[in-house]
Length: 456
Image: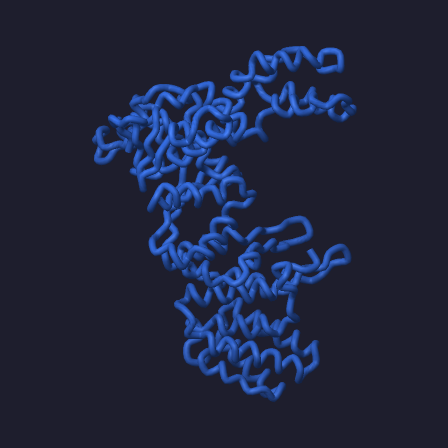
């Protein structure tokens, strides 16, 4: 929530009322810190943090300063900056000249400003002057229309506009003439949340820069809010960074965490609630790298399982199907040797056990692991593989009686007593992770240092 105040130093306050205000606050702080670094003013003159309230002067926010901050913060998307960097070299290669000409036509505003100009060493200064004269326009239009920039988060016509009757954010901005009834409660248009603020223009700076953008709304305090989102701001894989940090933060996060996501191919925001139980599971993952699995479906297609695993943890959904998929062996070809996923499977079984309900199977899983290793010492490798295939087939087709029969046959053949088997005979469904552990332990160990994905 935003309000005006009478203060010696500041005239505006913003509270972490909902995620939009929280994200605006994070973006504003990044903007103010930029102004401090550039020498516009001291931090104490720009803003002040009081628990969940940000104090600042609205006059500190100008269009020019905002755009220069955009150029700095999203510099990797600013084609004119790439050109400036290339032209700063005394000598240019043919590849650099080719790249400059590509950049001159890289989007609509670049084409408009540079028109029919084709770069050569003779017109270098002309291009530099054009950039200087049109810098703010180039920044504004590149940013406003960029699918990974402002356009990903808000209506492109709302940038720098005063507070409107409809919120400027994607999926909050509607055509009131056409959709007023469909988005209201009980056909009452007054029930729709229209709150808009100019400061919502700062929301893009709060999200991670990845294709699937994240904002973590742990607004217990603004300092914690800012620091948490800084961790994922520039991450190539904020999902990994987020859940790895949750693993390390479980001891002091004693509440559910709200995460807002924005995917570039969707025109709406999504909300993800990370419950305390999920945080506890993440905290017990010994090596998060082990769930970043690239599953080789065939020689031409990979399936990335990290999102599926993390979503299952978040939603408390068992991952039996993923474990069984990884247990099934694939036949190597002349061109490709399929990876050994045993270490990944071991980690997934540990996660699945927690989703099932905790550590009560731990003792029997250790017994199953030890029994499998004894079997591998007692019988030939080809026999181990044969029994393993029978067990995988039985559990995949949910023929648990058959699984138990094969288990008894293997115990008799190898001479190894399976103490863990009694739990499977009693209630197979509830103790399925014991069965997974036994099957997986019949594999040779994979390299835990590379997440169990050797030979990729």
